[in-house]
Length: 427
Image 1 (cartoon, rainbow, N blue to C red):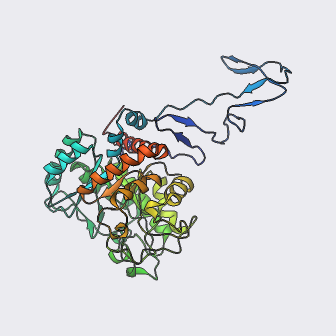
Image 2 (cartoon, rainbow, N blue to C red):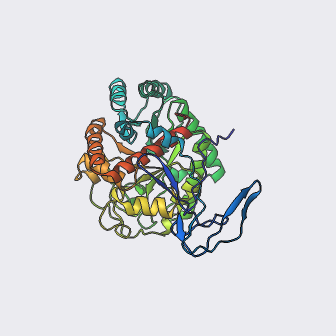
Image 3 (tube, one colour):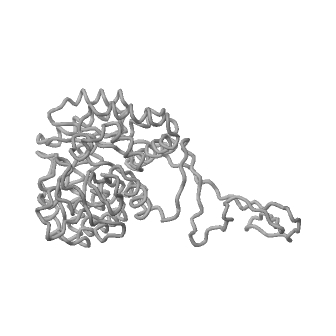
C-alpha cells in the first residue's frame, strides 16, 4: 500500500504566511480566485459611506448604506489559520531546544554510537546521519538507530546518503546494492519508482527515515566527467537533459515517500556546471551560467512537485543569482528563488558544512547562523564536535537579533512539521 503520510499539499505561490517569533501565524491576502476582497491596508479604511451588514445562517446580508462622512469601515477580518503542529511544538520548547532541532551530526562507522547518543541527549540534537561507509548490514545499523532514537526520546531524524552506485553509505546483508542514477534511468520511470520503494523499505527497517537523495543536478554533455562532484561518479540520471533528470528525480521522490522515507532533492540550484567538488576544494566551484528561470532548475521543481519534503543547498557560487554569497549563505538562493519562485515550504538542509573545504574560510558558528539567516533549516556537519560552537553562535545571535530569533523558531517549526509527517512526534 502506498503511504500518503508525507504528502502535503504544496503551498500556492502568493498564499504566504508570516510566522512570528512566538509561533503565531498571520494570514496574508492570497489574491486567489474566490478569496474575500480586502482593502489595500488589509484592516480598515476611512470613507464617506459605510455599510453595515448582518450575518445570517446562509451568509451575510448588506443593510442600507449610511452617509456619515467620517465613519470607519473595518474590513471583514480574515480568519487566522491555526498554527501547524510543528509551530505549536516549537513554541513549547526553550530557545536552546529549538536550536538543537537545526543540527544534523555525523555518525561515523568507526565512531562510538554511545558517545553520540549521550551528545544527542545533552544538546537536544534533532538529527543524525550515518557516514563513513557502514558495511555490516541492516541489523547493525538498526541497533545503532535504536540507541540514538532512545537518547532523543524517539523523535530523531536519522539520515543516510543512499543514492546508488558509488554513493551508498549502507551496505551488507539487508541492503540491496543498486546501480548509479545514470544506470537507474535505463529502466522506465515506473520501474524506478517501484525499485526505490523497495530500497527505501530496507532503510526504514534499519531505522532510517531520511534519505539524502535523489540528485537533481544536470551535467552538460560537453562537461561530462570533468564535473567532479556529479558527472565523474555518474550521479545524474541523464547528462545534458534536465527533462529526463526531472522525470527520474520525481520518480525517486515518489518511491521514497511510498515507503515513509523522506527524500531530499539536491544540490540546489545545481552542481552540474562546476568543475570542483565542494567537499574537497574551494576552487572551481563557481557556476557562472545558472540563473533564475534556468532550464536546469526543472528537476528540482519536479522533485518538489512530487512531494519532496527536503531540499539540499549547494555550497557552490552562483553569481548570476547572488554575486556576493555562496548558495548555502544566500537569501537570494534559499528564500527568494527556492522558497519564493519555486514555492518550496519544506525543510532546507545544507550539504556538509563541517569538513567541506568550500566553507573552510568561514567560522563554524557563522556557517550555522548565516545559513539560518538566509532561510535555511538543518545544518549538516560531519563532525559532532562542531555542534557546540554552532549552538553557542545561534544562541548569541538570537539574543542580539529579534529577526534572527524568529528565523530560528520558524526553522525549528518546519523541522518539527517534518517529524510530524514521519510519525515521530505529534501534538
